[in-house]
Amino acid sequence: MTIPKNVKNGLLHLLILALGALMLYPVLWLISSSFKPTTMIFTDKNLWPSSFTLEHYKSGWSGLRNIQFGNFFVNSIMLCVIAVFGVVLSSSMAAFAFARIDFPLKKLWFALMLGTIMLPGHVTLIPQYIIFHELDWVDTFLPLTVPKFFAEAFYVFLIVQFIRGIPKELDESAKIDGAGWFMLFFRIILPLCTPALVTAAIFTFLGTWDDFFGQLIYLSDIKKFTVPLGLRLFLDSSGNSNWGAVFAMSVLSIVPSLLIFFAGQRYFTQGIATSGLKG
Amino acid sequence: MGKYKTYLAGYAFLLPWLIGFFALTLGPIIASLYLSFTKYDLLTSPEWIGTKNYVSMFTDDYRLKDSIWVTMKYVFLSVPVRLSFALAIAMLLNQGLRLLNLYRTIYYIPSLLGGSVAISVLWKQVFDKEGVFNQGLAMVGIEGPAWISSPSYAIYSLIGLSVWQFGSVMIIFLAGLKQIPTELYEAATVDGAGKVRQFAKITMPLLTPVLFFNLTITLIQSFQTFTKAFIISGGSGGPINSTLLYSLYLYIKGFTFLDMGYASAMAWVLLFIIAIITGLLFLSSRYWVFYSDGGK
Image (cartoon, chains in turn green, yellow):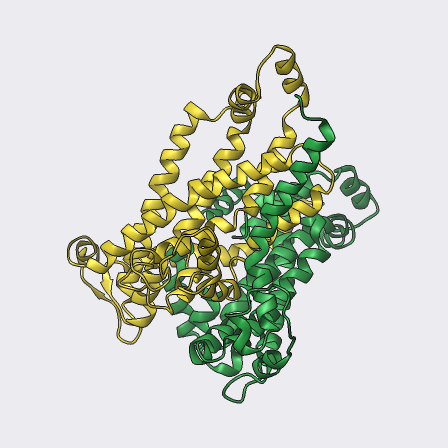
């Protein structure tokens, strides 16, 4: 009461910033260390390096066992692009059926779909692995891409909610104009759903980029390794001798997530609030 | 358009999901239940052994006992602390401040990156004996232990990493706080209610649905944590099983020892544990979750 409002607000900003700096410190330390000469990484306590070097980026990028780190990036990006395309297309199709078309057993399927959202992946893990093993798909990208074309319940739900907000009169007038269901879906509903689709795309990208577990069990040939697998191999084989390069590649590995985040920031709150995803 | 044509269109659009549901979810669920009663190593055909996997889980698998204990410790320490941080910072941010977007971004970044291998790699360094965390402790005169390599402290580095990622939960709390009408607080102030009383009588009750959501989601996720434990322990769950989270042990059983029947049984026990805990949460919600529209 005795403290003036603007002083109080100033202190609040200060507190929030100080706590925020503390939160970000490990990441800033990582970035700073990746630019420090090896001898200084654990001795120079300053966040701003007193001498810069790109040595770690060079030696890290040259990779290991004759595979450049860039290879891992190409593989990861390819997986992410296919996953985004598959998830967005198949999930929006299912969502359109649930939100706009009447057909028998719709309620049952919808309830079953919602039920799968909470299901821990462990229960399906082993048989899925066996299926892909029988198909001879292990150590190919197929187990990591094909399932993405069968819709993901989270995003179906997200897009259903969104389609329900689109006035049904649009459907009616499109039908009067002679548009069939496919026309209606591709020409009218999909374009209007863009915010929900972008949200689904962003979270699918991030989820696939960091999907260490799936990539770990399905990929074993280093040529097919993704960024998380490459990083782990790098840590195991050169960790204690070459921390600088490990840090440098770690920094590069988080750049795509940061870029996507800053580009699509306004879609985030919605996505997080709907799915409780990430972390 | 004819009725059957409409039905056909509905199923046509649903087809991808239906295939996935039967081939990759329902089928595998049934298969894993069957496999959990067998001995199966992927190379020879499954051999029915009855409840032997389940019996041995609870009698002679001491590593599993360690794993369950470590997982419980991880879940029941990290979830409450993570939610408390998230709520505290959300309330701090929810004061009509300028720069809210910037602040939200800062606090969300750890959640954005926290699941990556890169951050787990970093964490291994941060919590090293000579790491950044101990350097920070040293500044206030505390000598920290070797977190990662000590069996009694290693789990706390994982808990710390989980708590550090409170940003996504915070964003949901923040959205919930914004829903509470400011008139309620104004009226309470007029009536002479202090900040603490306002928190207990207005904020908390109106926030319980969001709290319930966050609690359920975070609990379910925490039981399934894998990457952190794998990277920080180098895939072993060590030292002395101290970071052997349930998912990691399941992976070791299934994919290192190729004991897929046993791993399936473990998956079903995990499902059972999660179902009981969420079931209890849902049952208890009648007594503490307050829906202002009467639960509609």
